[in-house]
Length: 527
Image (cartoon, rainbow, N blue to C red; front, side, top):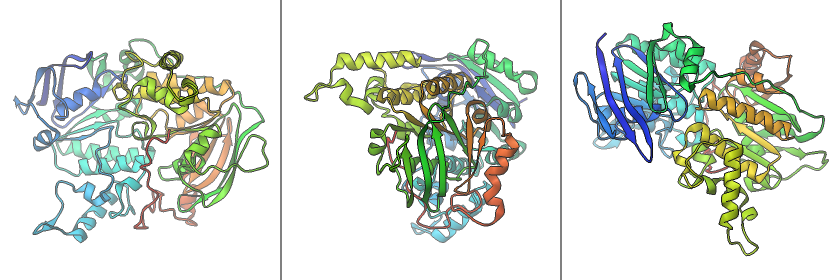
C-alpha cells in the first residue's frame, strides 16, 4: 500500500536519549496506532512529525518529498493536524473563536459574529456538543468538553493526516463511540490517522496497524487483527503484566465525611452521601453530570448555594470556604488536570512535594532546611517508586504516570486523611495504572478515606467498595459492591436525562444555554 508519511532513523536527545533510530510509516487511508508505556517516546515522535520539536537525527518524507517542518504551522500547511494531550485552546476566547481560529469569517477586518456562531453551532452539534453556547468562554468548559472541542476543530479541517494523542482520556463511552464514527468516516474518505492511546481495547477496535514503542525504540509493527491484547501489553512493558488488582476492603463503619444537600445550580442539586474511613467510594456519571463540580465544592474551590459537610463524628458542619480551609481540615483534591491545576511544572520534584507542608521542612524563623527537604523528597520518591533522574528534575519532564505519582506524593507529605482523586489514571499507560491501583488500595488499608471519580466503569468496579452515580447534577444512586453491573450503573447515569423532569446546562443533552456560561474552571494549582 502507498506510504503517505515515512520516518527514518529518527533520534531525539535531551539530557538522555528519548528516541533511538525510529522507523515508522503511515499509509494512505489507514488508522495507525502508536502504543507504549509513558516515556516510551510516542508523544515525542508525534511532536516531531507535527513540527513542535526538531529531531536530533534522522529524516522524514511526506508524499515522497523531504519533510522537515519548523513549526506546527508548517506542518498544518502541509496537511497535518494534531490533537495533543496538552490542549491547544485559548481560554479567554469563545468556543466559536477557538473552533475557527485560523478562518474566522470577517468583512473588511470586522468579525461576522452571527455567521461565526451559526457555523460553530452546526459543528458542535455534529460532534455531540449540542446546546453548548458558541459564545461562552472556553475556560468555562470542563476538561472533557474542551477535549471534544479540540477534536471537533481538528477533524472539521480537510487534512490528509490527523494525529490524535490520547483523545478519549477524558471521554465516556457515548462520546468515544461518536469519535470513532468520525475517525472511520475520515479514513473511508482517504485520510490517515495516527492514534495514540493507552486503552488497548479501543486500539484493537479502531486501528488497522499497531506500532509498539519501548524505551524510545520500535519493538514492532503489526496488523491489528494479528496481535492479541496480552501480547501488546507484554511487548509494551517487556514483561508479563497482571492488570487485576484485588480489592481488599478496609472500610469501617466510622464516618470520615458526610455531605448533606449540597447544591450549586445548575451543576448539582441536593447531593448527599457518606464516606467511610478506609473506603474507596467511586463516583461515576456522564460527562457534565456534576461529578467534578461536586468535588470542587467539597474542596472549597467553588461555593455551595446550600448544603453542609460534616467531618468524622462531629454534629457541627465544617466551614470550607477555600482550598486552604479544606487542606487544614485534612482534605486533598487531586484534580483531573494535573498539569494545569495539580503541579508547578517548572519547579523541581523536591519543591512540588514539600510545597503543601513547607512548615515541616522550615525552621522557626522560616528558613527552609534543604537537607531535611531533600530527605523528605527522596523518601516519597522511593515510597511511590517515582521514576526520575533526581529530586531536582523538573516536574514538566516527567511522564504522565510519574506526574500523577508526584501529585500523590505532595498530598501524602501533607498527610491528608481524605483524598479526592478526579480521573487519577487519565492519560497514563497500563503499567502506571496498575501501580496507581495498588497505591489506592494501600492508602485505604492505612485508613485513608478516598473518593475516586472516573470515566472508566471497569476500574471503578474493580477498585471501589461502593459506587455513587451522578446524573444531570443529581445523585441517582449509591451501589454496594456485589449489587452493581455495568448495565445498572449506565442506566443510573442516564436516568435523570431520560425522565425529562430536569435538563441541566452541563448535561450532554442541554449544555450552555446560559450565555454567561458555568463557573470558571481555570483556578490553578488547586491540588
